[in-house]
Image (tube, rainbow, N blue to C red; front, side):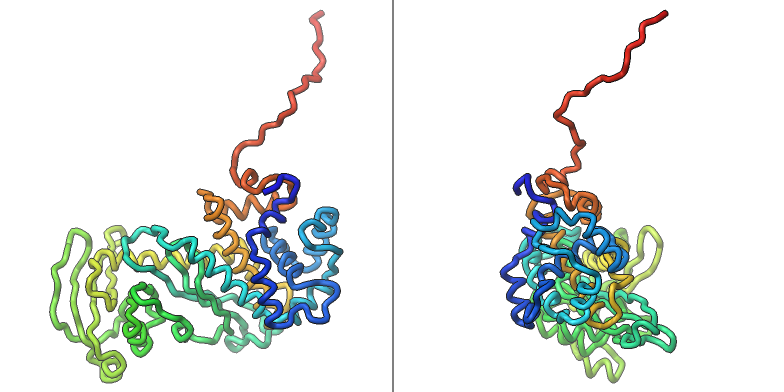
Length: 389
């Protein structure tokens, strides 16, 4: 990275511009556009994400303040808030959604084989969703309940690297389990989910794909034990059984055997029962793998706390999805940056540093090194020395 360029300009070097332009051409994003290109829109919305801008007026004011430094980032002219608002309303959000998938594919290659606490032969993913509450009067298209609106972000998180490999944004009323219909299951991989995703017809599709699921059993789970395996009580394992479903409908949807594991948390004393179709993994590893599911909760918490996905710059469905997809893009860009520069800092630390150094002209690796600044200029003592009386 060259020292004469801003940190923001160097950060954008991690964006594959050629792939971005392909997404723009696919949906005609720059057709008949003279003032604000899709790439400039992406940069400005990324600036808003990284610096926690509250509104379009806030973005406009801050860009004016650094106007002389914008030219070398690719933003060639002043952008009024009305122009940015129109772009968010009319530019197809799928441009940024498709580009996010390209970035995710890059991150997947970089983080393949990354350890995450459980020794597995295959990859491991966690599924979950989070709901973002909205005002019904401003977002009537996202009606959730009688007097409430919401959108829901469904994510498939790679536990190796803690970044999303698949994200779908839907209205809040869409049930979590429908997300499984969009997942392409990799043979030999593990998919960890909570009880909301128990649908035996869909779980059997995972089983038939030669992939493995790990979930928790509901209280009304009906089964008949076939046989029991050896257990390690010292590790908290209560039982390790192979069972078949006895409910008439569930047995029809899932006629194969399921492994049922009872576990007592040694810290809280909480009793948990897990279901999986993997018969080779040690029972304690199944419990540890389910514990890693909490990482997807932390991902959603991080996104809501440190990126702008709780309040929006526009009220249409297109503007909301555009903002959320660009937020996901920059989350993945930070993950790529962290891996390629071999940084030990957490994504939170990197984001905080970027928020205050975006327009400084210093090598990005130096800006993210967390080393104390040392001035090359000698200290000059201008204090007058008064002689005693």
